[in-house]
Length: 414
Ligand SMILES: [Ca+2]
Ligand SMILES: [Ca+2]
Ligand SMILES: [Ca+2]
Ligand SMILES: [Ca+2]
Image (cartoon, rainbow, N blue to C red; front, side):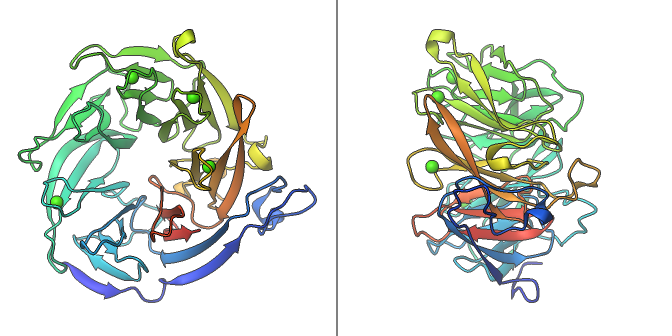
């Protein structure tokens, strides 16, 4: 039943993490290297982060940030609760649900998106559940205390990180994911968004499993039309829909991570891709677009090695990079991103699963015509879950980070 209450006990605990400027390898960051199993020893930006633990309960593997009650202030949505901004100390239950043991899963809340789906100017929620299963729409009644009506709009949404994006250019978002092993997208009937959504396949059958890792959407060949990216290559959107989506293979093959982030990271006029290589193992890199002259092929650059024993940016290495989100975090005009560990994804069975649940920002620094990524740990006990968010939570012009994971729900503010 819907209810409004203040979170007691586990809520509202704040800790300060201040990152000092460190320019010599002999200095250590605020975290004891012995605890983390590695040293951090390069120049990191002078940014200060403050963590707020909203709840230590495991209620979602993802969060959304949006104004739920129309007061113009961003709220935080995680699973069956939304937390009223700007302090997030009041939890409002809008649908049935409860906290779960971290040894299991929250089957109905891996990824959360907030948007006004039915055009009544109130933001609604899309909940992505267990890979290969449902996506539910919860329509916002506009009154606190009323339960939101749920509609099962999709019964099979495969891949581990579906995407909410305007793929077709009609100014309405689609959901990019898989069905019956094929990549494609679900479209709503915008006259009635509660009706089952329609799937359009863009590939042949590529997998017999719903647990496909690595998915992105964005324009890779500079024709203004978003393409679909998977772990080993990308599907080029045809000039007119429907049509044949030509497949282009990447030079690098991998097990697949999670969100594949498309942006012109090196600022040379074409879009590149940042991706983790294995959402349950090691590896992080970026594909640099070789440009039109080279028919939009891509050159791979390592950020963190796939080899667990080797270290990457700023002598850092960690596993289970199962969520990535981009934002220009230091506002220098170059796109950065945040990722971290999906703590306890398969209990203690994933490589490095007992290591600290890091949340890490990677800053984009120009190095010739390429990029030197500078890593900076902003939290060591939260991770990222399946759907980390990087956005300005309190309207102060600074990008913050919000996490739902098996460590609970957290915000880490600049
Ligand atoms: Ca609405
Ligand atoms: Ca394109
Ligand atoms: Ca580029
Ligand atoms: Ca930046």
